[in-house]
Length: 147
Image 1 (spheres, rainbow, N blue to C red):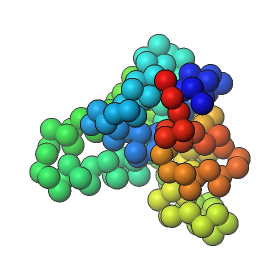
Image 2: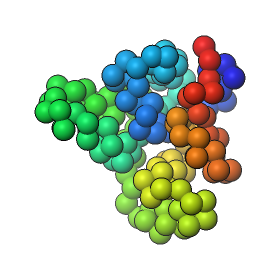
Image 3: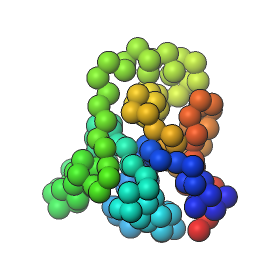
Image 4: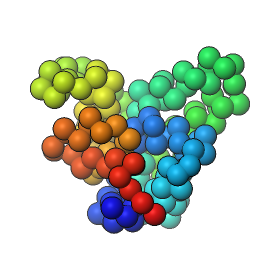
C-alpha cells in the first residue's frame, strides 16, 4: 500500500516506538515513510501522538551508549514536535491488562494501544505485525508501505 493512501483518512496518528526511532536515527527506508507523516504534521493535516512509553523505549539505547545528544533529540521530537501531542497513560492499567489478556500482546504494546485509543487516534503506526490483531483501531505497519 502507498503511504499517502494509508494516511489519507488519518487526522490523528499514534506513533509506536519503532517509527520514532527510524525517524530520529534516519533509518532507511522507513525514514522516508516517516517524512510523509512529519510533513503532514508540519502542514497541519495530521496530528502525531506519542506516549511516555514511546519516550522511555526510545531512550534506552541512547542512555546505554551515553549519547546525551541523541537523548535530547528524542525528547524534543516526542514531546515538542510540530503538531505532536504527548498523551499520558494514567488510568489505563486495567484496560491495558484486559487487552493483553484478550490478544496476548506484550504489556508495553497493550499500553500503547489503549493510550492511542484514549488519545482518540485514528490510526496506529508501528512496525510490529503482532499489533494487527487489534481490530478496533486502524493499524498501519511500516514494512507494508511504499512511497
